[in-house]
Image (cartoon, rainbow, N blue to C red; front, side, top):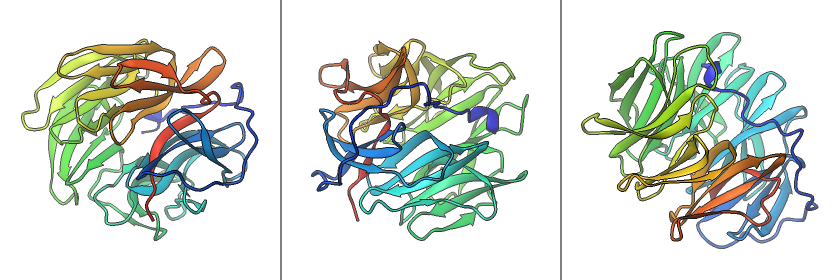
Amino acid sequence: MKRLLPLLLIFGWLNPACAPLNASVASPGGSARLVALQPGSQAWLVLDETGQVLQQTRMDMPLGCDISSATGQPQHPWLLVQLICGNWPVVLALNINSGESRLLLVGDAPDSHLLGWDVNSASPAAFLKADSFGDTAIARFYIEENRYEQMPGLPFYTYHMHSIPGQTVYTFTQGLGFGSELWLADGSLEQAGLFRQDAAILGFATLSPDGSQVAYIDIADSTEAFTAGHLWVMESASGNSRQLAGAPAGTGNGLAWSPDSSRIAFYGTNGFSIVHLETGRLMITPGRMLGSPAWSPDGAWAIATLATGDTMGLWLYETSTQQFMALPGGEGLCCATWVGAGQ
């Protein structure tokens, strides 16, 4: 559904950081690394928690392409980058261990959208929506094997998928005026059932890490852009839902659960926002969020890209202090996420 997938980031007017490209250094310790992108120089960087650049490498990406968003997994060394190449969206996979990159091509489809990671696959895999001149297919792409399989059991108008071990949620709409459906399935997608049908579009439906809840942003099913939306959370067992906070709809900004399922990071009405589910406390720092937030694997902090005026940079929310701060050295960077340091 293309109106739900706008061009998220336009980088020509933003000031990139001026650090020169350095030779790769030894990978930092730990099971996952904080990786960010530098659109001005088309580089990817490994950072520490202070914003110090530990590794900086130029991306091997097609000419004429712009970076839209990126997402990683703490379990695998692959970073998936959504690119906009002219009028075509394509997905680039980047291995941060070897530096290898490849486009995830589904047949002769000229465009592909990343729907989400498939964490239930034995090897790194992602769900893609590919469009071959009107012939749309949903596919599971096995990144290291560089192959895909089409998934005929999923409607071709699926627009978002999210998985945790043993569970997958996906949402789809049959078109303008039809609202949307949210389905819950097991990890293999062999058993699935309708969980919610709504007159609105349920954007960015995301399972909590413990599987007990689904968070989403409601988007008016209309041609009007950037309507007022809200962040909702719904219990997986009962389907009972409650509204948590306002969230601009249709902006293309996703949401992220903290690893302990106690907090949600999202783009709220006034900026980068964190809501604590038990207390209802809402923490906000102003700015226009670009892309989606991400949590560190230990839940110590969340990170997001914010644009304030003509400046783009990375901002952190620290759980222990419940404070926001600009990441030193993060100006001109975007799309920060955690990527595994595995094989």
